[in-house]
Image (tube, rainbow, N blue to C red; front, side, top):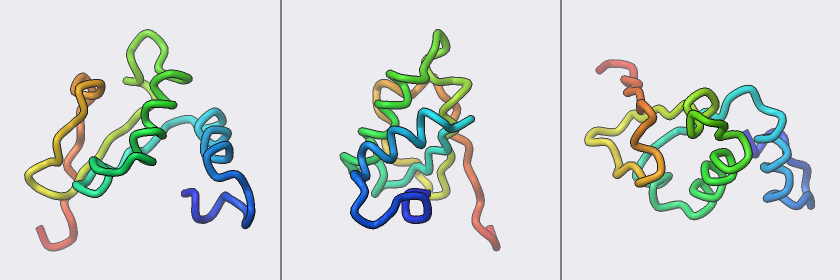
Length: 90
């Protein structure tokens, strides 16, 4: 999580890119807000470009969502299974 791994005053975009480069997976938490966020788009686009390999991110990007209906999935990501994560009590 960027709020725990980035230092005050650090270039956060470069820091997130380094974190993605070192990660085993990118857990993409998908919601209406995430779908509208330019920063979230930048992160998954960077992951596709740098870690996408031949499977277009299928072994690296792990998307989950918890709001129904699911927010619109970008044209670049429909090949990935977006797993529904039920909230407690559902």
